[in-house]
Amino acid sequence: MASYDPLQDWFLEFLRLHGAETEVDGNVIEAVLPPEIFQRTGWGEFERFAFEPDLGGRLVSYHSDILEVVKPLIEERGACVNISIPVEFLRREGFESSLTEEVAFVNGVFRVQGMEESVGSYLIVHFKATAISEEKRETLVGVALNARTGFPVNEVIPIVERRLGEPNGLTPGPEERPDLAVWADRVAALAQQKATVVFGDFRKSLSRRLVRDLQRLTDYFTTIEREIRKKIEQKHLTGEEAEREFAKIEATQRELARKLTDQRARYAMTIRLEPVTVLTVWHTVMHLRLTLLRRKQSREMVWTYNPLSKQIERPGCESCFQSIRQIHLCDERVHLLCSRCAAALPRICPVCAKRGQPRNAISDL
Ligand SMILES: [Zn+2]
Ligand SMILES: [Zn+2]
Image (cartoon, protein in one colour):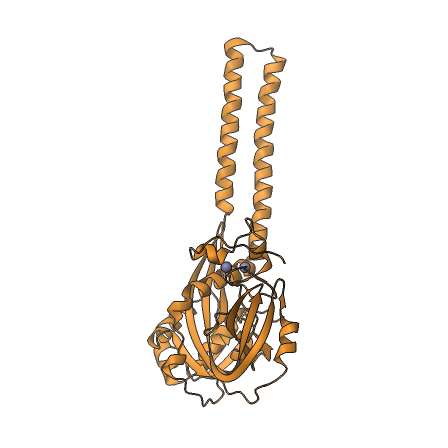
C-alpha cells in the first residue's frame, strides 16, 4: 500500500525545479534527468527513484545519502529557487461575506476599505526535522508564509507543488523579493510547531514507555524496601542493627529517585531543524485593505485573497504565529491573538509585552 511521506513530494519538487521530466507512480518517481543533475550526482540519465523498499530502482529514504547528494546542487543555486505561477482568474467581489465565513472577531469588528490587484510573494521553506530521544526519527516539514503579511499559509504548499513546471510570465521587481531574514524567526517557530505535531505519535510512544519503565523501577525498589522493613519487624531489630537497615532503606530511596531522573532524561525528546530548501513563489493576488476596530482604537491592515487556494488567508496570531479563526484583539494596539494566547494569564497582550509597550489588557467585551 502506498504510504504518504513528505520526502517524496519534496524530492519531486527538487527534480522539477532542476529541469527533470518526471512521472509519478505510487511510491516511485521515474525521471529523465538533465545533465546538471546526472553529471553531478553520479546518477544515470534515466532514473527510477523508489520511496519504499522492494520497488526496484534507487531507494530514497532519510537513511540514504540523498540529502547529502542533492545538497551541493541546492547550495549552488543559493538554496533559494524562485518561481512564479500564472493565475487565470482573479476574483474581485464578495470579500466581505467570505471574511465573515473565514474568521470571527471575538471582541472587535472589521471594515473592508478597498482592494487592489497586486503581486503576492510567498516563502516555502522545507526543513529536515530530527526528533532525538532514546531513538531517532527523521522527516521533512514544510512551512509557507505570505512574505507581505507574515500570515502562515501551509495550505498552498501542495497547490504550488502541483503547479511547478508550468510556464510563467511574471517577473517580480526587487521590492517584491522577500527578505528571508525578516521572517526567519517566524518560519523557524512555525516549523518547530509543525514538527511537534508531526512527531506527536512518537512523543506519545516515548511517554508510554517512560510510564511503564517508571512503574517497573518503582515496583522493584518498593519491593526491596518492603523486604527490609519486614526483616526489621520479624527479627525485632533495635539499636545499631535497626539503624543499619534504615540506612539501607534511605539508600534504596535515593537510588530510586536517581534512576527515575535518569529515565526521564532518557525519554525526553528534542527536535532539531535544518533548512534544506527555500522556494520563493510569486503570483497575482488581491490585496484587501481592512480597518480593524477595537472599542475606540483602530488598525489598518492588508490581508490577501489567494487565487490559488481560492481563500482569503487567515491571519497568524502575532504571539505564537499560528493561523487563527477566532480572533481576539488587544485593547490598545489592536494586536491579533489566538484564543490560547489571549486567554493566558495574566490577561495582558503578549505582543505588547514583548515589545516593551505598557501592560495592555485584552478584554472580552
Ligand atoms: Zn497565539
Ligand atoms: Zn497588544
